[in-house]
Amino acid sequence: GGEIKASGTKENAAPWSIGIQDPANPNNAIATITLDGALGLATSGSYRNFFVEDGQRYSHLINPKSGFSIEHDTTSVTVVHPSTTVADALATALMVMPLDKGMRWAEQNNIAVMFVYGAGQPSIRYTTTMAQYMKEKSG
Image 1 (cartoon, rainbow, N blue to C red):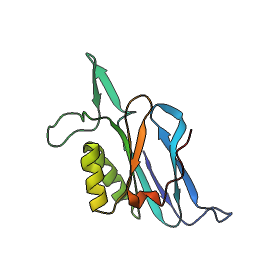
Image 2: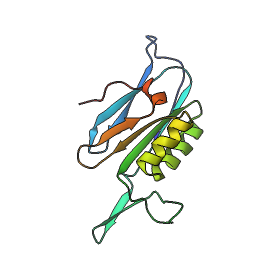
Image 3: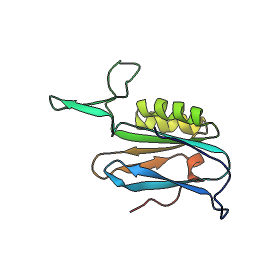
Image 4: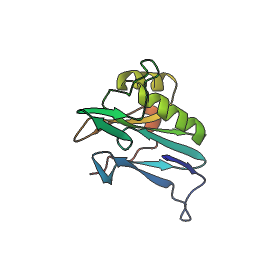
C-alpha cells in the first residue's frame, strides 16, 4: 500500500522525510514530503497496477461516472492528513478526477495534496496547503 502514519520526530528531533516515487524512474523520488507530529500520508496511483490490451492501457482505478478505467494523465496523487484513512480515501477520490478539477476541489477544501502527471518526464502540482510539507523536487 501507499499509506504511512508518522508520529513525533526522529531521534535527532528531525521530522520524518517521505520520498514520493517517480513513476518514470522507480529508483528515484520525484519529491520529498516532511511529516512532523502525528500525520498520515497516502498515495494513490495508476502506474503500478494496470494492463495493456490491444494497445489500450487500463488502470485498476475506475471512474465512478463512466464505470471504466480512468483515462487522464495523472499518475499519482499524494495526500497529507491527520487521519491516514482519510488521506487514503482522498488520494483515491482525487486520483479519479481530472487534474484541474482535483486541484480546484483540493484548494477549495484546504487539502494538502500533490499531483504527479504526464508521461516520460512527469511534473508535479501541489496545493498551497501541501507546500508546507514539500521539499525541493529531486533530480
